[in-house]
Amino acid sequence: MDTMDVNKMIAAILVAGIAYTVAGMIGRSVVHEEPLKQPAIKIEGMPAAAPAPEAAKPAGPHVPPIAALLASADPAEGQKIVQKDCSICHTFNKGGEPKVGPNLYGIVGAKRAHESGFNYSEGLAKLGGTWTYENLNEWIDDPHAVVPDTRMAFAGIKNDKQRADVIAYLRTLSDHPEPLPSPTAAETKAQPAQTAAAAPAPAAETAKPAGPEIPAIEPYLANADVAVGKQKVESLCGICHSFNKGGAPKIGPNLYDIVNAKRAHEAGFAYSEGLAKLGGTWTYENLNHWIYDPRAVVPDTKMIFPGIKNTKERADVIAYLRTLSDHPAPLPAASGAAAK
Image 1 (spheres, rainbow, N blue to C red):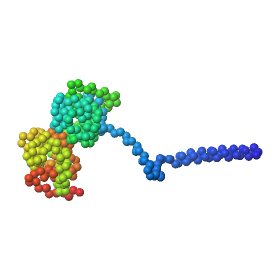
Image 2: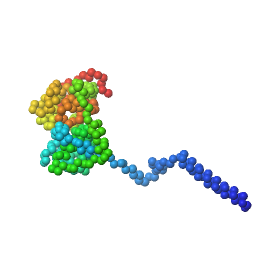
Image 3: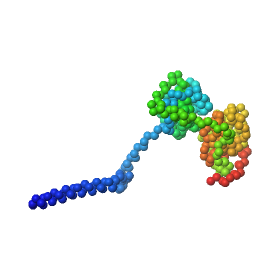
Image 4: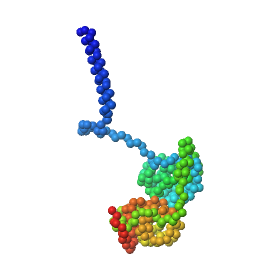
């Protein structure tokens, strides 16, 4: 074999190698491999692949850190909020007996579900951990986001400054208050903006209706489900109200024969000043507005119930309340199109 033939063979090998490399590069740029989501061929008896672990979720909603706000919080303002919104269900004195909710003396730094013998919800009993400043921050913002099965009817405090005031007051309920947390530099810098954003807008100097603008209840009452209403009333309202004829009031008044009764009708019951002065009767439409949002009707109400926003559910509840009477009030004639 002469030199020319050898050179040709070497050149052929080099060209083939270059062509292979270039083809591979082009192929990888055009075709992208993806792992199969399941085997192409299923073999009976083989164990299924374990699902990828889910990312751990926080115990509550994402709210701004509380440390920076606590530095300028006002315990006196927090006490006012607590007395207005929380004292109906909780006690705050050292060694105080629980009410509907547990005693809250020494709550900051205490173990969750700490009160011996108190019937906590299953979710809270299993949650574990302690009531740190941040855990209280998330809880007071939205208890149901932390423990969906909580029995608390409290809707939460969305205003960051007010939450900080409340936690600052709860901190004082101790023989040895927990040290205040040190905010990070970023939290301290963000704090004035959060406080400003939390400040409520000044109230308009205009007359307000006795309740919010919501759909009329009459069309829904015709198709309301009394049994569903009873279940909802027992789960949401039974802790504060009695419903039997002649029943004694609990935290709230007895609700037997409430439809068309005068507002603030129960003799001797300590109604809020606003409700006592409201006057009128509990018509179907007045009940509709009240059950939607009690505070929109009477801002100083002692009720911590956040309301029922679903119109069908409100109709079910009102239909059940109507049955609590020796002579149920006639259903109103629907003036508009029937609810669909």
